[in-house]
Length: 169
Image (tube, rainbow, N blue to C red):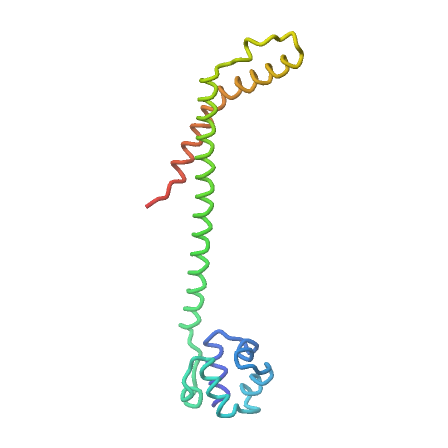
């Protein structure tokens, strides 16, 4: 009866023989012998065993204990709840990163627009007969031309991204 109770309580707690042996500082074979009825724990070990299994000694020595399916379902439920919480935290972290990206994009676009408006296009008055000045002037003009045409689309996309990544209540 003791051997069956040890095995049933151990399984109900979701412990392997190896894990229980680790808690009791014995080898796995000792747990196996107890469960097969080939040996029994002494009184001190029985008390330690009941503490490790969080079960009264009287239950270990008493009537046959049956495995509880509800306990197994509860363990699975708790594990799923932990996984769900981890996924929620991961989604929230991704949302925060995306939101930061959109904020930085909007800020960068607005700062570049302000700088372009403040300084105008100084390269237009440069002397383009010098090859180095001509190359830099053409590069600046190309950047400004592309930026002015593409940045409104990027700004609108970033604003939409900000709206979509706001924290929902």
